[in-house]
Length: 223
Image: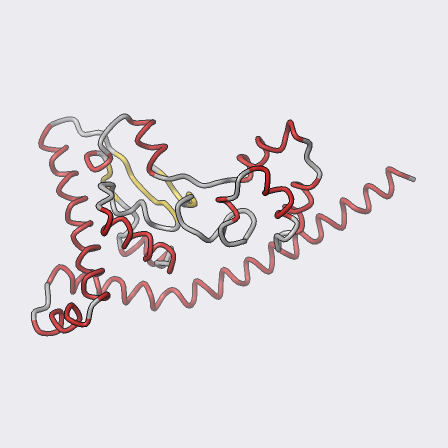
């Protein structure tokens, strides 16, 4: 089971530095750019590290994950072992669909990236289950194929005028159900966004207080 793990493949770093694309930077740029982070404690920590401890500390702060780690860890076709992909209504209520994951999902579909469609999500919430029989394995494959089909249908209907008109005239029941779930998730997104903004303000205040206490401590030690 994977819970609330940032996706390294999306663009916004909501977990560590709170800066777009920061987690994609190579090591040689991270320390210099970290001072621009809106998290003072993170910026100060990065600045104070020596070469030996910097890389380990960067990984401990968090760089996220992608499907690559799971393929290496399980040595399995992930479509055969993912049994929940984070697109369930309960999960999209908790983690509404973000703009960067919509773009990444379209890339997966158009490029034919043959991985479970939950891996473009900005926050990974996945359940893996190694099947005990060929029947269970095929059931998992069918689940992931249906989920990808919903993603393809949504992409088609949202990207083209013809697709939008086709949806109105010849609605696909499976797509309609998915779109209803998506509409509900979007209704919940605004409340979650406001809550996140409040949490961010609290974290920024906490980081500022920690930085101030560290500065006072250094003054006391130096005296």
